[in-house]
Length: 261
Image (cartoon, rainbow, N blue to C red; front, side, top):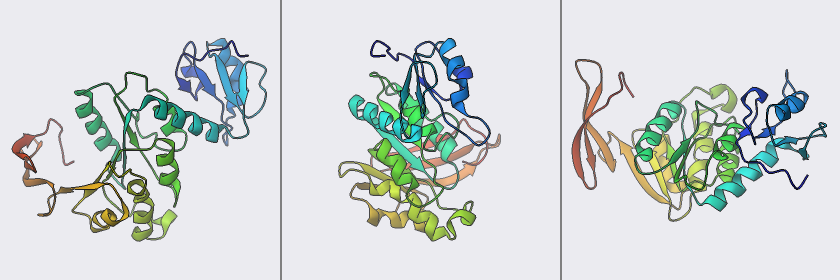
C-alpha cells in the first residue's frame, strides 16, 4: 500500500513494536517471525518486511536479511553520519560504550545496544539513526572470513578500530592468523581520508597498518604508539589511572570505572 508510511524504528521482536514501526520477520530455528506479523501490526507496526505474504501490509522480499542490510546502507548514506566501526576478540562492547559516551558530548550519537554485532543487529542499530545523528558507533563481530567486510559495506565506516586478536574463536577460524585476517577486513574498507586505530601492543593488529589506505593511529603502551598510556596503575579504590600521551600533549587520567580495561 503506497499510502503506508513507516515513521518508527525497525524491530525484530513483535513485543517491542512501537507505533509506525517496520517489523522485520525472520524465520529462526525455533521461532518464525512471520507467525507474529499480524500481532505486530495490531500493536502499531506500519508494515512488515517479510519473505512471504502475511495477510497484513508487507514488503515481500526474497531475502529479509539482505533487504534489511540494503535499507541500512541506503539510510546511512543518505544521512551522511560519521560511522565508527570497531572489532576485536575481547573488549568490543565496553570499548564501544566508552567511545559512544565520549562522542555523545560532541553531538547526537547512536551506538550498538549490548553486543548486537551481526548481520541483523548491526543494520537494526543503524536504522535508529536520524537526521540529527552525528556519530554512529557500531560493533562488528566475525564468524568467518568475509563477515566483517560484509558488515562494513552495509555501514561504511570512516574510522575503524581493531582492539586485539585473541584465541576465543580458534575453533571457528583455526588460527590466530586467520582471526587477524578476518578482523583486518575492517581497515581494508576505510576510505583514504579515514583513520585506522590499531593496538600497538598486539603484533597481529599492528601489522594491519599495511592493509589500509587510511591514516593509521596506534594506541597502547608500546613506545611507538601515537596515543600512549604510561605509568598505568590501579588506584587504592580499584580504578585504572595512567598518564595519557598524545601528539598534542599529555594528561593524567583516572577512570570512573572499576577494574582493568
